[in-house]
Length: 154
Image (cartoon, rainbow, N blue to C red; front, side):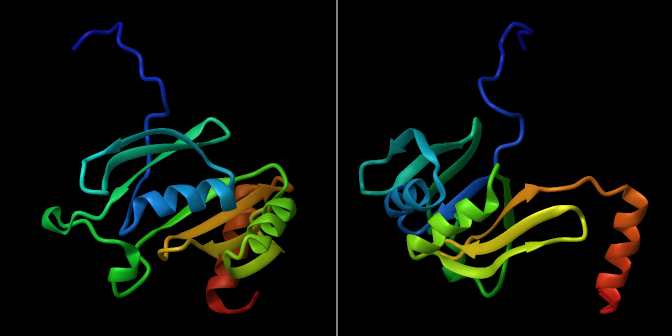
């Protein structure tokens, strides 16, 4: 492998599957503020691969290809993943997503790990967390807070 070939994106890129990938691209751009980078259509209305960007970071998405074992979350029995996106103003992002009709799972709340976040589900059931770091929490304090949370004390 050549050492002079450089990636033009981050090294870890989440890939999401949607039954209606074209609709998902439009929705993610309109509601969450992503920008479409590229789209590879396969000729039958499905998308083989698309890339969306948010503040310089990318996700990939594709249409469901049942023959290859990829399904939309709406075809699965439970939560299979969650994506976290850091934003500069979580309350403004929340207000926009809510105004666009996104399914809000939890409104913005300050968290023990120093973030303020909200949870939202997209049009096919992918769960997203948008959060803003509002304070630094020492790791040992975070561990203690997590133990309290997990035990139901928090």
